[in-house]
Image: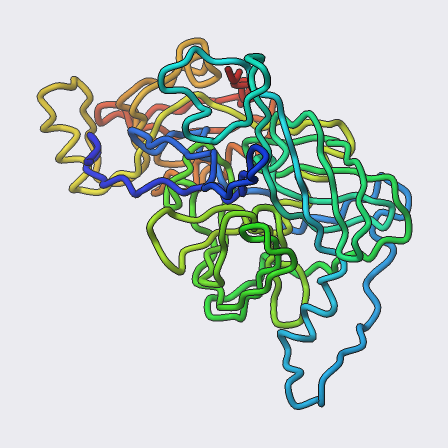
Length: 412
């Protein structure tokens, strides 16, 4: 399918939660698919987050206990860097089993037919999902994906040593797909944290998780790319620049750690692209930590929002926009970021932005890609000010825009 801006839309990514249902515990694919989108969806696809992020410190002894060196068996010749990394981090990787009650549906084609939901005497059913997570606080603070625990009535956490705990969700942010779960435990092993801001394509990458219910499975590959935008990955409703890896990631890996060769966590595995091989995606750990810190402090994350749909301009995109007989939208320049539409009553509308405007500078910095606009919006935060230079039908217009808070999307 081709959009009005001439861009072929990629197959959407699939979140990699494993669903198990009913007494037979049949293994199914992911229940969460991401819909395709018409254009680069502006604020809904923002992916840049602030650099140099810190570990959460608001809970006592949250990150005080790092993993001790693990003793390794074998004759020594079979102990490589992957074995050492897994021995270091494996004890802090957990399995997360979440369940939620599903409302009864009218028969016919219903969610039960797709998800295998266990019937409950006509009163609905129980949907169960399995994902992964990792301990970031010795007092039981665990990082995972929001879609692993979304809507869960119960969350059960199983440690590698076999102990099981009831988990409490401190907060979940659907926009970045990050969640924090707390269990009542102390002196837990904690993962060492690496620096996802300095990753290079070609570095080793190691994934640990519970794919298809096979606990503590390990796969290895490389970092294929960094900074993949949400539109690149096919999840325009997210605001994350993803790490791409060819380390095998499967349903059930959601929320598990992605490690570097030193056994440090550099990302959180979150998505795959259906039908593709060697295309897995992880949330950079620095971004995940910043979100986790806010979730621990306030239970929610506030995201800055303009309310525009936009597209990166090229000469080809300009020609396609201007030659579209079904639209009155026209642009006068070849480079910049074209505003395709403006949400009524949004901060962008209040500032006077219009469809057809081309953003050429923000805070006196040249803008040639939509990702840059979203980075400026995110970094400005709610209530900040952005000075925009706009080309409007060949005329330069300067506007001051004040980002608001991203509206909460209601589900169901």
